[in-house]
Length: 430
Image (cartoon, rainbow, N blue to C red; front, side):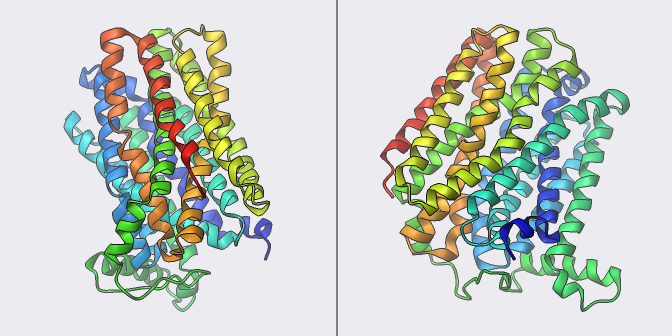
């Protein structure tokens, strides 16, 4: 089957659908945070703390997720991660103290860590060799689509039913996506069971046995996982590789920019510029709308670069994307509202390339340059973990700078930080 036909296969659909719900549970809390602030009588610094706890969770557990995916079946890891993040999201709607929300957002991050790395490898293997960029682009596009729904849809939902109901509803939808994901990824095993209850319990038993350490699976779809234990020597080799670290730093720069815009732009537009919540949400989600359209485009462009062996063009493209994002965020400090919207759109366009290229570069380095194909999930998870864990302090710094110096200085500082982390990728040699 061609990649085009496989795009519409049910396993790929289930991954994309779960990714959309993953993103809804990522973004919905930032879009309704102004309501949470009122309920708990907090200021914007609390948004920085909650966001940072989430980033620590998603960043800290990327490497464990990568190791488990290399040792066991990545399909089990992705299902387990989806169920964990969805359960924690659901419980967030019942918190009575702000520290409970901090802990639950940390657990949401942990669940998301167990989703992302395996999802990149699974979808790439379903689409086939030479479609890695397309696979990452589809995942990022789904992430942005879910973000759009989470930002704008949950503002309306929270205004109608309250922010707690919105978070509970997001968690329930996430659990449904986890069950759907489990069914379609394990469909061959399920066909041997005639009872639907047995099918579901069979999947849950596999996940439980996995985390008890009593099973060792092979991923039976276009990828083989070694039966031997993960080598600490190889782990160290990947984690200290200069090329991998340069890619991770560049992704960290893009991640900081994306995190600052997605977390603070709605609060900034509503509180500082005085827009209505609906209009602030609509403007805030323009980055996501643009990213839905351009992420697969950048993925196809990257695949073209790889096929044509355009070694330097991918690095040049990544640097260009990062610096354009940095300049646009810096200009937030000067731009009036009518210029702010085009800047947000530009960030959405070039963030598409800023996210697609590093993940596919990391996989190429570990598979082609280092000759370690079994560690591709780990390489992607490691790069993603550095970018997310490394960015945990950015929302805290930004929120305190807003309190001390105002949004103008905070946006300018954010732009400079992005440039600092992006520029070193120029030294990358493939």
